Amino acid sequence: MAWADGVCVVDTRSGRIGRITGRAGPRLSLRPLSGGGRTWACPSDAVRAATEWEQRNADVLDANWRFWRVGSRQGGEKPTRR
Image (tube, rainbow, N blue to C red; front, side, top):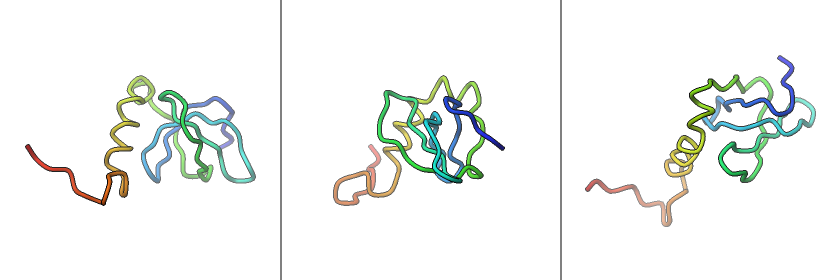
């Protein structure tokens, strides 16, 4: 599928939600919906359209993704239960 710039999509490899900001060959450049942030590259065949719910809750979903991704915590420690 040909994706247009500005469309909100989900990177199916990681679950991150982003807005298409450009393309380089078969890869799309995505930027997080929640307050900007660093762009990342994603193959165009590894995205799907974001649902309305995902777009509305992008800030919470992105914060959750950043917390749980590998290596995001100092020293590689696991979250503790309280």
